[in-house]
Length: 180
Image 1 (spheres, rainbow, N blue to C red):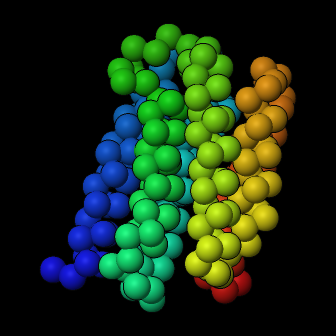
Image 2 (tube, rainbow, N blue to C red):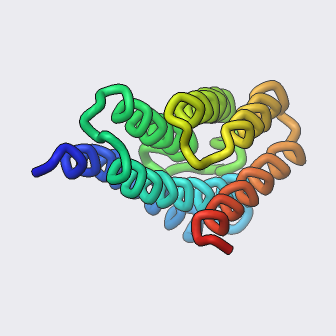
């Protein structure tokens, strides 16, 4: 196996663990009693699913076009994936079918979720600058700023705006990657 294949196995394993948690949470929220779901957390679940796909795609093609055996480059590929997984852990519950109120669950874990989002955006921006990647680092800093607003505010409308803004950011990233 090549260094690239080993790197992708490590990244795919972390992503698979996160996907398992997200899919369980989506299912639990779908079958939850009426009135216990929360649209913000639901949209974050789908947002994080898309973010995981983007992380795998970027690493799959980013590692093959670069020197994958450089430890620093591997770390800047692996750290965002690890932060994504920790963010998924903060967003979901270990026992999603036992969550009585997804809105309460979201706001209980909001601080950890947002702190990890801030760190992830900064790390990705720094990695983009260091390795001159074909992504716009300032957009990841903007993402960090959006998470910082969520960190300091418990306003439900603001958190709804956050997830919509982050979702538009991800859709834009996908469209840019597809060349449209």
